[in-house]
Image (tube, rainbow, N blue to C red):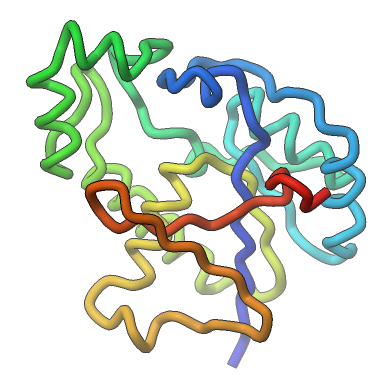
Amino acid sequence: MQTTRLTLICHARTVAQKLARFPTNEPVEDSPSVADTLGMRFGAGMRLLCGPELRTRQTAAWFGANAEVDEALRDCDWGHWHGKSIKDLQREEADALQGWLSDPQVAPPGGESVVQLGARMGAWLQTLQAVPGHVLAVTHPFVIRAALMHVVQGAAFNAIDVEPLAIIELRFNGIWRLRLPGLEREGAV
């Protein structure tokens, strides 16, 4: 049986993330030490993919290889919310924001719902099942969440492998959230 190994990496931090804004096609902040660490951590012989946005292409470039742009790895379509802050939406479109947060079938105005994103990621993961070897994909937080939800649906307990020295963070702030720390974490680089 052939084995497919998929490593999903979230793009580097952007100003929009710092300001709690829905993204536009903004660049990443410079992180030369993280770039060096990433380049050394993953060896040759992998297929490197990334979303079409500037932030994913810039992060993928840190691996020292030419990344193949894959449209399936594009960010969620935020519709009319591109570039808007959460605070502005809470003030100006509170009902629409609450509907989107509480119902995965609700999309931002003119955008893509969580259910639609999940279906896109499920279809993409299915195409990888016939691709042996290591695939490294640089993409976005929502895309990674959708891929994780596709993998753990129905049989979550048996669909999760916890490797030695793995670090999983759970945080409670009204709801429990899984936090997957990155290399930019304080003191990690």
